[in-house]
Length: 125
Image 1 (tube, one colour):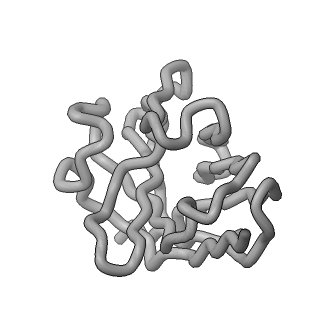
Image 2 (image 1 turned 30 degrees about the vertical axis):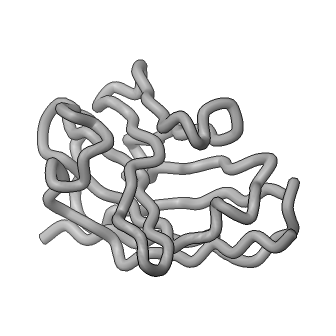
């Protein structure tokens, strides 16, 4: 049974940076799509960044493009999200997720079947 564990969340001031990590306890092959999602109180879960199985292709939501960078280290079963120039509107619980196989409708949460428990990111102005 594969489990995902996020870490690296915290509280920062606007303009600061955080690096989130997502580590799989079981085997996550390099053939699977992985992504980061976030959910703020009272809002729907939204896709933030996705990375294709080989790591050669990535996709970002317009709200984070140019500020966030997704990457993965397949031998370590770990995915990362480097978040720079953080804004108060980035405040949310951040989740990592896995979709078996290639990425399809990459920012749609319903496409992903395995989820972590989340890590909180709070950005103050």
